[in-house]
Length: 173
Image (cartoon, rainbow, N blue to C red; front, side):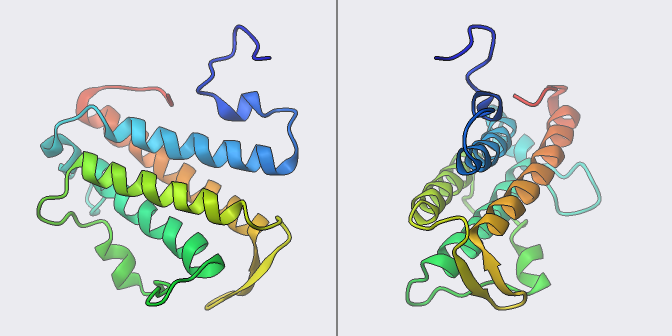
């Protein structure tokens, strides 16, 4: 039963007595949702506006996160013909660039679909399951989940700042 004073959007708080897998999943989903909340509710022009010297924009944060989800879960744990694990810095940098016709909603939908695929892939394996990695040798699912929490949380922090610079909205949820 949920505690009446705990916001149900705070998945990590709700999972505070869960097992390791439930806690890892809750933290990752919490940060995924934060990025989406920060990007939504703006015009496409505002979400694509560059407010910092790098290529980072609110809309543009969704593309590398979509790439990361596919790289770490689909390509490593459930590769399909034609899947290529992206390793070049040029590809990573290009993932921040918005293409013609890309909107916040199309990017958000692609990210949500990638996250859902990642969840389906991850649930098939134990945390100790190890796969080969093209640069690191081997990684466990546990390591990948922790890495994705870190990566997604870092981009959620960027999104917090960019959203505040865009329209003054603050807060993590």
